[in-house]
Length: 194
Image (cartoon, rainbow, N blue to C red; front, side, top):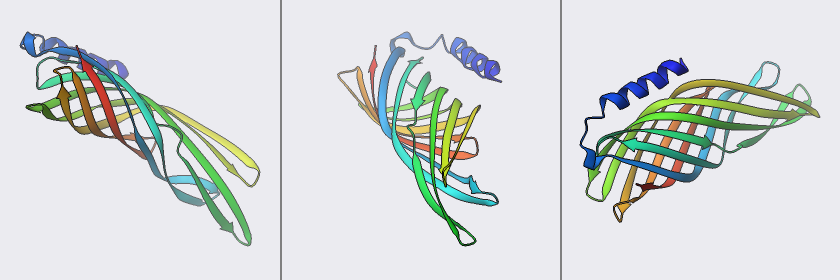
């Protein structure tokens, strides 16, 4: 599936080569944001699942190529931090305090559409996230670990401004489905357009 996804992005790139050369450019940038992980499937006591909902500071680096002012491709690497949540459970007369940490990193290729409005622009992107997720659960002196690597649909929308014809600043929202959990991130990014 990964080869098929990359082949589709490559084919889109080749088909877009005839686009107007003066509107094409390479860009690279980085961002900082807040990532939230939300799932109902954390199980500490057998048969009892709880809702994990926590956030942490996130970072990303990215690069891309715009074939014209409306369409391009982008590759992101994201580190969504290590959100942590604590819960207390009662099993009969016994109370159990549990702590869960979940960390997510991902590579995500996207197709990006842009609507330029002078120095302002609106953007949307769709793609796939190839992610690694790992977590730790500690409860009542016991510790557990889980991890997974997979891929899933990812998308985002953003609004930005370009200064001096090269420096783009953007506020962006991204969402990824990760191992049954919804991961959302709000980003403030800066990119240099070469």
